[in-house]
Image 1 (tube, rainbow over the protein chains, first blue to last red):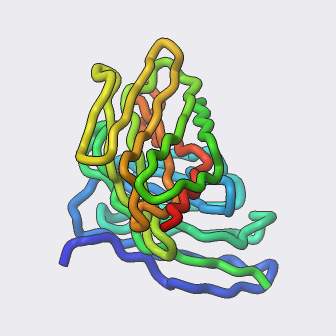
Image 2 (cartoon, each protein chain N blue to C red):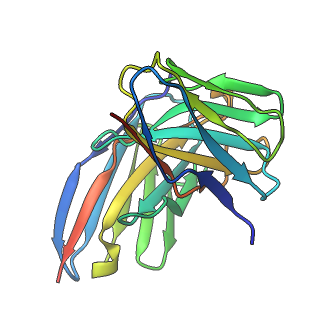
Length: 114
Length: 113
C-alpha cells in the first residue's frame, strides 16, 4: 500500500526538550517537504528536500532541523530553540525535480508542548 | 520570496449556490497554481491545478481561472453540496524559487443544507 506515513500522530513534550517527527514514503518520490499548520495561517513551509543529502530552508526554519540520508525518509527535529512549537506538522512528497505536480501529504503529527 | 494571499478566510453558502475563493500572488515568475481541499481531521488533497500557459481549467463542478497580468487566480465551485464543506488552500510555485510551494492562509467553506 503506497503512501506517506508520519509518526507519532500525537506527541507531548516538555519545554526544553528536542523531539523528532518521523516521515517515511514508499512512493519513490524525490522531493519531500515539512509544513506547519496553525489555525488561520495556512500551511507554512519549514524545510524541503529535492534530493538525498540535500535540503533547503523554508519560510520558518528557525528552531527546526532535518536530514535526508535516505530517499524515503525525511525526519524533522523540533529543537528547544523553537519558541512556539505547539502545532500540527504535515509532511509531504512529490515526484521528480519539477515544481509542478501533486503534493502527497501524510496524516500529520500534532505536537503539544506542556 | 513568494507571498500568497487568500480571501475570504471563511465562506458560508447555501447548498446549490456557487462559492468563489480568490488568491493573489507576488512573484511574477510563479507558473503553477494548485488548489488543495482539507476535510476535517484529514490530510490536504489536490483537487485541481493550473499552469501559467492556461487561463482557465474546469473539472466537473470545479473551475480555476488565472489572470497572470493581475497576478490572481480563483477557485469556483458550482452547485455546492454538503460534502464541499472543508478548508481550501491555494498555492503558487516556480522553478526559480527552488520548487518551493507557498500556500495561502486557507478558506473555511461551510455549505448549509
